[in-house]
Length: 338
Image (tube, rainbow, N blue to C red):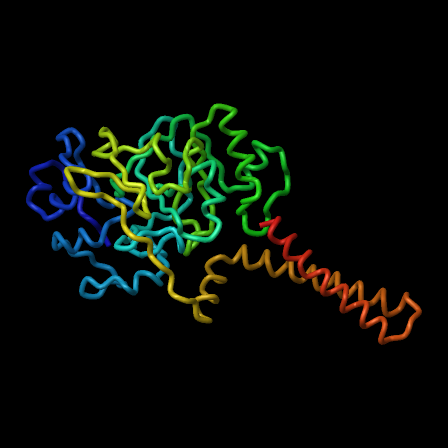
């Protein structure tokens, strides 16, 4: 849908968007106009409803957003929910901006989202860094400082650790993160951007940003030393509550962010099919790796069958043992390459 553009404060004041934006940012200086809502990435649906703002999209029926949680957008400015699949807040809806995305410059204040306790292992993954999504409209600002950008995780591993082949299957590279981020911080970087990572629910729909000085176990991105601010442009100190599940700031006694996590419903068969179709390259990579594994087993079976001179029953037993031993090795290899 096409969202409004406000040329000045008078024009904004004639609409209910005034109350929405004041809640999130407080007072907006006159010199910050025009404000184009189409440039936002995220909206808070609880505030949209509170201030009686009408959003129009094929996934919204009478201000009910349930269908948006299963929709994947195709065209710019389409609305959809649960962008990340596991790292989203309740009561949010995203505005789709088609990739590829441009790198964010050094020392730029951008709006972000971050959540904690979203999945098993997140506390280990983010003990030396804090992962965020660029999310214009969140009302919570992070300064990029001295930053560097890559298309995907493996490029960062190659650049900082000089490892050529790291995680070709899923491009996660989680096993390299702690070493990678330590090396990047030693080289004087404050943040890393990944512009083309594909593991969001509908593919590459946002920029990942890593705060190299953060600790993502905390919803505020750190225990005490926070690198987030509030107010339009991030000009005000952020008072953040680490007891919440998502990053937040107090603005004029209103909590911006800090919402509960969106909990995924159990997948059905078609959900898995849609995930496979949305993430075609990853699906293909897994399929190729499995075919290679099966081909290796077949080769081993043929060697045992024709090259080893023992009773057939013993050959079967040997082959079964090899299969049993190979399964955890295969799984560990796939995990390492993911």
